[in-house]
Length: 171
Image (tube, rainbow, N blue to C red; front, side, top):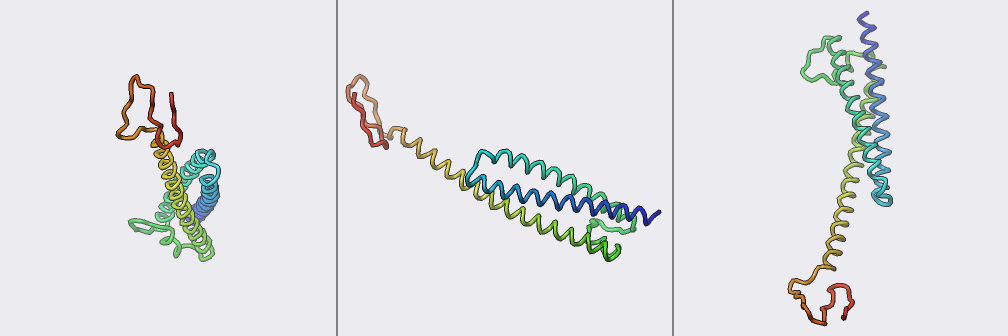
């Protein structure tokens, strides 16, 4: 019965790791789509960000589940450590099971790093785009703002040309 519980926990751990792996794959696809949208289709960004948030929520749930299973396996194997990790469990599992779990963990780690790098690059691109929008906005505002020494001529028939437009207005 004891070994059966360990097997159930191990299988459940593998399933959670596979789900995490797939979520990270989806996150990478969305991050690539986000980059493309930042460059050419800004209307799609909001939906992509919402989809990424859903995936991150799922990932958070999977991480909690993974910690719970690791804790259960640790208790079952009578491993007493302050922070038990998957790596700490591997020596206590059958070699083929340990190898599968190790490979899944490494794959998750690799995908997580790739997703992190993509998101940092997307963030830099978004900041650059935002800076460009701000600069454009300031330029457009400066075109229509009067110069610092501008004086309105009340009742006069002559009006100063609007600065920056290259057009003169006469009344």
